[in-house]
Each structure stands twice: as C-alpha cells, then as structure tokens.
Image 1 (cartoon, rainbow, N blue to C red):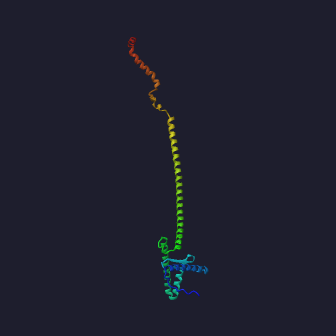
Image 2: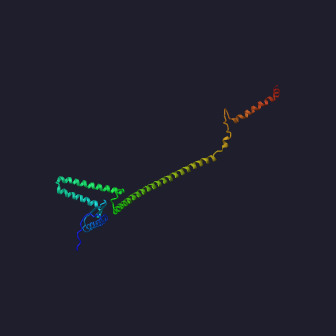
Image 3: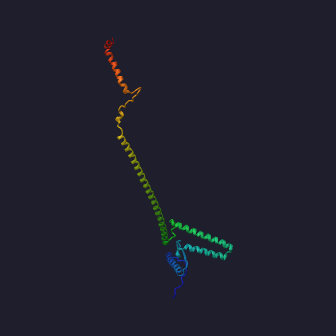
Length: 245
C-alpha cells in the first residue's frame, strides 16, 4: 500500500515542531542553492522562526540587491496594471521611497550589529560573518595607524638629525671663537713680557737745557771763575790793600 497524504497542520508538540522546522528549513535552503546553481538564477530565501530568528539564503551573498530588484519589479508591475500615467509617476516615487526606507533600515540594523547591539536575531553563521567583517575592518584600521606612526617617526628622526647637524655647527663655531680669543690673549701676554722694562720708567729724565744768549758749556767756566773770586776776596783784604798803597 502506498503512503497516505500527510495532512498539513500545525504540529502541537513543541519538540517535534522544532525538529521539523530545522529539517524543512535545511531542505529549503538546499533546494534554493541547487536551483541557483543548476539554473543560473538569482534566489533569495528569508525564513523567520516562531521565536523571531532570521534564516536567509541568497546567491553570491547579495540579498539586498535581490530585494531591491524585487521591490522595483513588483511595484512597477502593480503600477502598470492598476494605475494610469499620473499614478504611475506617483508610484515611481512610492517605489523610490520604499527602496530608500528599506535601505535605511538595513543600514541602521547593520550599524547596531557593528556596535554589538540587537544580536539575538543573528545565528551562528551571521555572527561569524559579522566577526570576519569586523576583523577585516580592524586590519585596515591597524594598517593605517601603523602607516601614520611610521610617517610620524620618520619626521621626528629627520628633525632630530637636523637638530644634531645644527648643534654640531654651533659647537664648531664656538670652538673657533674660543681659539681666536685664546690666540689674541696669548699675543697680548707676549707683548707685555717682551716690552720695555718697568724700571726704565723710574729713571730721572734729563731736564731740558735753556740756552739764553749762549750755550751752558760756554758760560760755565766764567761762572765758576766768578764764584772763585767771590770766595777768595775776603780772605786777602790786607794784602790787596797794601798792594794798592
């Protein structure tokens, strides 16, 4: 006998329901992958469990791209069937608004995930993918930080070398100046040691000779003779008087 058709209804047993959900979910995702590979189709599958956990599958990990395409096509088809040209223009704005709203919600959700918030809805695979993205971002940040540190260190080394060169130049100038000062002091000291003796300044200098009406050498014998006569005159008064009488 053949197997009878299974009646589709909610499984009341909680454990059986969870086991069936896991099996059917894995089978659904497997079939989605097979059809995407065999038929070269873009497939997206979104499943929420009764606890609100998200399970998804998309070809080439482009779920957002497929959803945007779905929104664009679904809204476009509805507008072509139910609305006229004016409503169609309004529908385009509606589609664009819906697309931007969905994109904003996706960005906000990713931001919360990057900040470590609202992670209860992520499964193990999603968490591993998020971890890989964060690791890649950290590698880029560290590489940029190391580059800036190397550039800063190189700039400091160049500045240090310039300061050392300037310091060496200043030391050389100071040594040359000290050498010149020492040479000048040595020359002054040599001149003081080999110059005229200080005792020569103590010798009496000859007085200037005043020649009035003749030289001093010519008048000296006569002056001495007059002095001799003045000295001898009182010694022989009688003799001179007798001689005169």
